[in-house]
Amino acid sequence: MMIQALPPDPPPVVVQAPASTAATGSVEVHTGDRSVATQEEVRVAAALTDAQVKVDSGFRGASIVLYGAVFNPTTTPADVVVVVRGPDAPVRLVKKTRNMGVWLNSRPVLFEGAPGFYMTASTRPLSDIADFGQLRRLGVGVDHLRIDAPQESRTVTRYGVRDVVVSRLGENYLDWRRAVIRLKEAAALYNTDPRGVQFVDKGLFRAEVELPTVAPTGKYYAEVWLFQDGAPVSVSNLTLTVEKVGLERDIYEFAHRRPWSYGVLCVILAACTGYAASRVFRSR
Image (cartoon, rainbow, N blue to C red; front, side, top):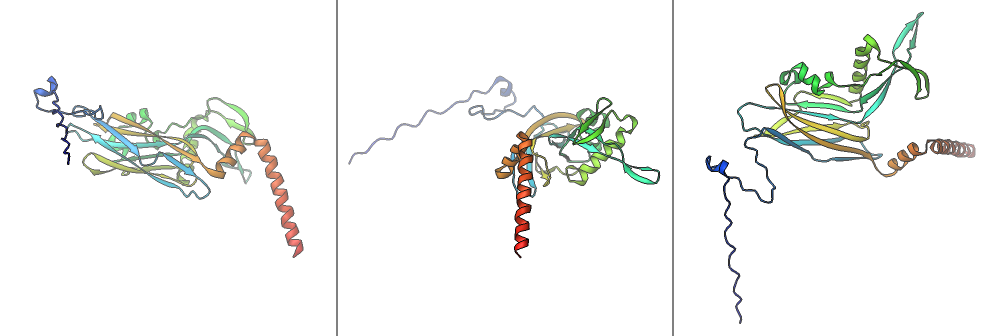
């Protein structure tokens, strides 16, 4: 019986400590550049449990967990603020006005740049984390949300309605803006949770992103801010995609690519359905 000798053990790997760490005695071994030194850097890192949400006929909303870690070598405490913004979409509003004892709809106003979805979650109320000016500059929070008002005064036709007013709105802008936010909150599309970010362990945190059934499709952008002493010190950017799948996606794309053909087809299907229903009821 032949016995095959095993190969000799590989020579030990000796890691030369950099001069900057030799004095402190702290040595970090890098393997294939898979780790990054964080001892001297305050930063935040985050990720999503699911970066793609598929919408079909059975979609009833989705709950996505955003998780991450805070690297804070200092003794100054830090706060985490999560901001998730969906694709912008136009918002058309009308106001009830009383004219000669009769309530009528005012001329519609079109906002051309309101987020279709917006949520904030934080470790504490935003007003306790940063001051008004800082939040306004970053656009963090519903009160500081940038909603594009009409840039000039003109009258156009939108949504099949004539004489749609597109203007700066003047002093009434804040009232109309509050109406936009109120309607979005009622539809669960805007949400603010001052305790939505929870630390589950030292430096590890989590937050939930709740997408309602009526959540718009498209690209969502998440910003995870790290604040210290009322100022942002780090930010992590994430992307979330909400898209239609299956038959719903095919119908959606057909309706937008060929609207005239889609309209004619809908009329034909409605006529055929009505005719078939009338024959069924006549036979009975």
